[in-house]
Length: 108
View (cartoon, rainbow, N blue to C red):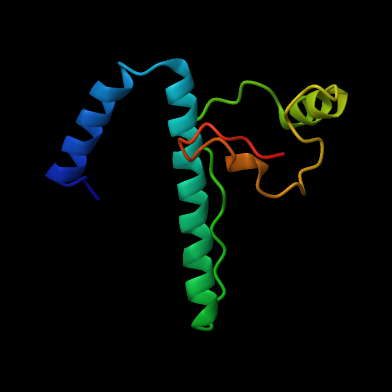
């Protein structure tokens, strides 16, 4: 299935804007996009489940390079000091999007 002309325009515009963004802004936008994609996936699964259809959508990380392995990332988190802002527990819900609201507020 091909992209519509509106979608192609949006991608072209995004390429233009991204080429002029700072690294910090790129990081924030990337995290917002990933979170949005995850929320959409969860919403689709919940809607289908409410209709009696069990459907699993796999998490595919195409397009994102894996800089470090999952094991290395877990090791880095476990070795972090108290001064680091990254939580050591994956069950610390809410931290993953603390800085995505453009209000410069961080909640710990």
